[in-house]
Image 1 (cartoon, rainbow, N blue to C red):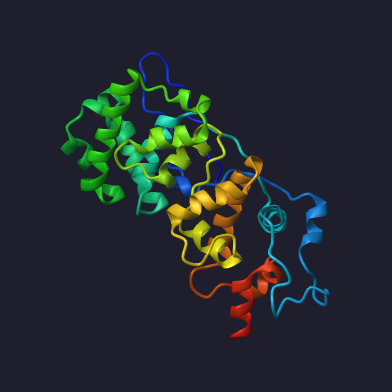
Image 2: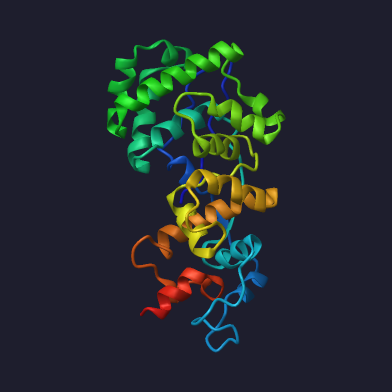
Length: 279
């Protein structure tokens, strides 16, 4: 996926950050990856390897194992927080239950119509709804955006959310989740992509692949998976695991007809072993 572009700094008259092109949805955004280190190439079992690619998974893969093996296919994700939590918040709300393209278009329409966060906050909800209609669910998202901006201005007196970087992670997430339309995934996107904090967004791809690999229980909800995965990860693995699982969920570990025979995680994947055994 394309790398997130760093938005321009917001100055004394805060403006909606400009972007040269719509960026993908927050929980599914990836930055430029660098080629895998040569030693990572040893992680994938070769044909004839003693670790059978069929049959029972030999042992669970650790998050570090998963990141290392997937780096062979997708490169090593580079964590470069863009530093604009307000843009991340609004864009993530717009991305809920829609495509990357549509949410990007909706944000660009907001940017063209409203030249500052103040202007957006003061706009009638019907006007916001009209501008974001291309993104889908505008009747739900427009009130959420307006209510979130109103709450931020009331609580902080400005649009600077950089203070979240200095809070304990749980407190930063709780502060964001008090805003309208902000759940665990949206809060994690703001903290990870904008501020560089080790909060793990769990979207449909991360949730599915984590369950198949046995990182979370089969019946764990996405909300529960946020807590389980975060608590099991070293902070430096949060971003690369998120990006790696999203790429893998889109390309090989698909919801329907996963390509298990091509997967470098197969020998440590309980679900993959079942799928292969059923073929």
